[in-house]
View: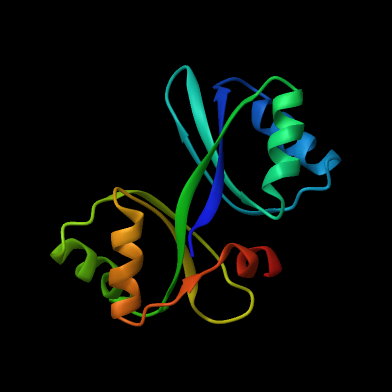
Amino acid sequence: MLAEQISIFIENKEGRIAEVTAILRDANVNIRALSLADTTDFGVLRLIVNNNEKAEHALKKEGFTVGITPVLAVEVSDEPGGLNKVLDPLWEQDVNVEYMYAFANPQCKNAIMVFRFDDPKKALKILAEKSIKVISAQEICDL
């Protein structure tokens, strides 16, 4: 039940994010979640969108370097320690979080965290054993 994220490598200069979002708008692609990591010269814009194929095609057509990465979207209880209910069993079994970001879930009170793990299949197994809800790619698009 892995989801896919689009990673776009962009120059760190004025207007580049607006350019990316305009390309997606014109391709009728809806952004469900995003994260931006930057350095002095470039950035990586990570997106969960409703149509990866359309997004990838539109962005590549405009000269952007685009990658598709498997991620897990996990429902996290909105309470003190909610995130640790997810992280602790993974840490105990040596699964490393490479990065993560969150987005609001309009359908319930819990948050959704997007994780990139060093071993996504092992993470998926551990989360299932702990009855932690993993959100499918289709469920994310339907939010």
